[in-house]
Length: 64
Image 1 (tube, rainbow, N blue to C red):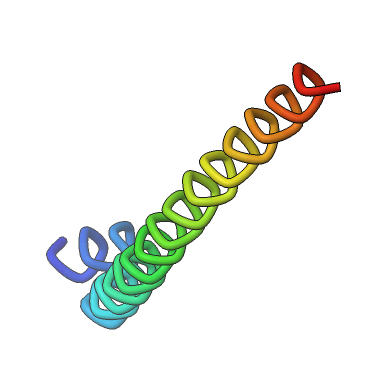
Image 2: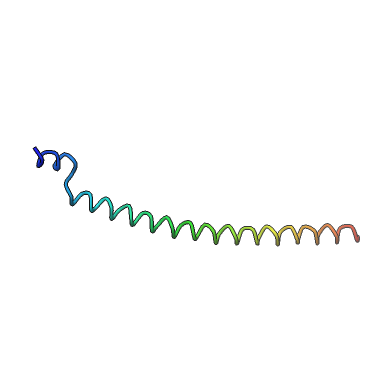
């Protein structure tokens, strides 16, 4: 009975494999979150630069 129950659940090896996959996915997720944070910071920097340039153009247009 116990063997059938273990077989139905996939056994200990499958559980270890699943835990390893979860661990790998969690590590990949942490890396992606860090990359996303870096990309977000870069995007915010670019938006600020664009706003500055738009203001410069507006000032130059007023001077003409």
